[in-house]
Length: 453
Ligand SMILES: *Cc1c(COP(=O)(O)O)cnc(C)c1O
Image 1 (cartoon, helix red, strand yellow):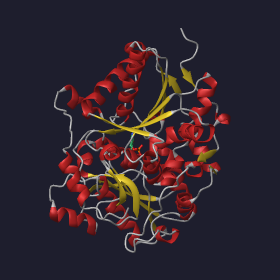
Image 2 (image 1 turned 90 degrees about the vertical axis):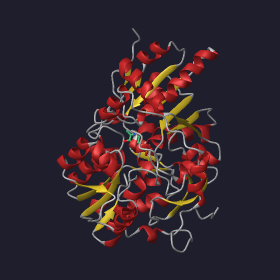
Image 3 (image 1 turned 120 degrees about the vertical axis):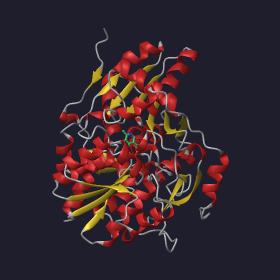
Image 4 (image 1 turned 135 degrees about the vertical axis):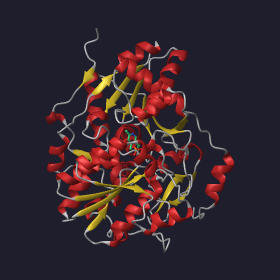
């Protein structure tokens, strides 16, 4: 037997800073724009809905940001998370490649989302905010924030994409258990929701619509702020605790990855695992491929346009420079609910434009095949989102075998699938399919964008 399988860190070895990749980017991201004036947005534009410290983090070019002590303490409920050498998967693939995964499924919510839920709730609490709103797709972000908000004594309303609300009753119950109020979106509690329901009474909802509802509710009330689970710079930065830990763990194992892989919804877990390794590429000239994997049914990185677009469907958020399919794009109802978002974050988009990262898309059936092979060889049943990263790791391992090369492949296991077994049931029943989108549909959606760039 090999003498290591799981590489752990002690609490004392845990990183105490988040990494802000903007400091090291050769081309900085374009600024967000005020949605009305179309001028660069200022910090003041964000004040009605975000905690001030989070706004500062959104704009800063500081390289490292100190993690508040109280946040570090809460992280220790489940951090540091294990880095695991996937010997079982390697053996099944008969590959010369070494495969490692960072296991972010061990948190209370079962995903990487608490890494940012806790600091977001903390900074709002510090500012005396009493109510928070947010959206959730698959339900992972809503559940992560439900615990964090409750811990700091903040009341939370979660707008949950209606199709997920119906498909995932247990996610809703997790949020209720932690004390949050969960509302299927589109709802008639907001102008945005009512507008969508009027046009599409049967709308299954989308992340973009749910964002509109949560933002509208927060903007109306000075005691209420909004929080977001992905896309924005500060959220991506909080997730870098993942990669910072992994760098230390890889050092312990005496390894360095050639390839780093994350699944891609809005970019947070991808940034979390990828950005600290990109620092080695940007500042030390290390040759590391960092790959984002998106679903074939929502291919903003591989088939979208680099353009200013809204973060939500109705157009309430600042305009963000991003690879986007257009804010009205309605992705097919795939099971990786957390990846059904029309756009990408500004930093990731700029990195992709500058070819410092790669992107690829993955058909749904291949992701489930990969997820099941992983479950049967490594034991953990992965979230449908995470299976996208696994599928790409498998492609790379097969490529290494073809080329007869040893490569070190690292991917982020962003979450477990214990609350998503319904998706596996559908896969076993043979009712899942691939969704490839015709160019015409993407072009029609992109046509509605104002061409600011
Ligand atoms: C939310 C989520 C994702 C997608 O969001 P990103 O911001 O792109 O990371 C991926 N995996 C899991 C398990 C999630 O909960």
